[in-house]
Image (cartoon, helix red, strand yellow):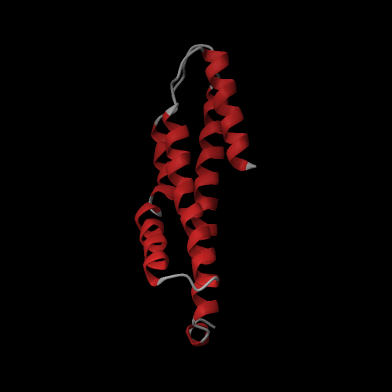
Length: 128
């Protein structure tokens, strides 16, 4: 739902301004969603006891793309007063995208942790 919200805000901004400024946020959101999707596939592969290659493959994809999720926070350097778009609109867009990226990153970490502790319950003992 948050990705749809961010997409709607981006679309509103594009239509209202007639400019594709801040369009890079769509790409950054896509990159932030990759670790969430990879974590889901990793957890599924762990639960189904799939091959080690599949499990390691999804884990590697997850860990490589994980830094992209919070990276959207760095986009706060881009707001500026632009004709036709109030600053609060760009700020709302950036806050929504950054929050969505952080949430995607956090939930992917939680999914991977849950999958690993389900598979190796003795690891949980050290996390109390």
